[in-house]
Image: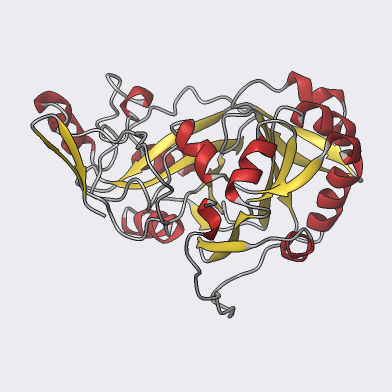
Length: 328
């Protein structure tokens, strides 16, 4: 039985609270069969089936509507200071072409978000966020601490191009300069009389790019150019794939980890420890946790047997006399 057909779910009722993206019409025309809600926006979950999408992603190239990866822009004289306060990772050596994966934590060291920070220019940063209201957190801190920084959500809607043929497709649309972009680095590349920030990154282990499309009217033009350029590459609309991301060890905020978990429990300590930034919010709590040791670590595991239904509640896993028992 296919994973995507195990359970039937009610439809999602659309309203102004649930925003569409610049690519929603193209996603619908591509045959999307499921959505979830992510940062108050629609995020596709599968097209043909989770399994078919998985195999295609590993062999060809897909275009993903990930406009739900909203950007929190931090701009002003205190922008760098504010971003540093958010995370235990040191951003002081961050170059103008580098993406940095940063855990954002609360006062107790619990995960608020796992974001990708980009230094767009001096005194301007983008935080490409997972599914939580980081903008409100950052704006509140800026105001409460009296920092000279303006916080907003810019009109930026990312598209991801993922899969082993992504380099070929991206070269056809953006030119050979895409080969000069290193892993978790970015460049501004020309498209149709404008330019977009393009990074070698994405929520898969198959390799690929993320295009930060600035200006909603450009969305359809970029989407169509990618599909026109990839006709012979078996290009297909896709989305973050549940099977592939678990196999790759990529955690999903709100599913695998929440504010109850610290970065150490999420396996993210390698990004900031032992060089822990004690001046960040939650720095003292993280220091104490490092000293006493981590009590639990999130891991993926394989369970033999038939397909399991979609997870809508935690499944405790118990170890009793070396026998695994799971309560579903």
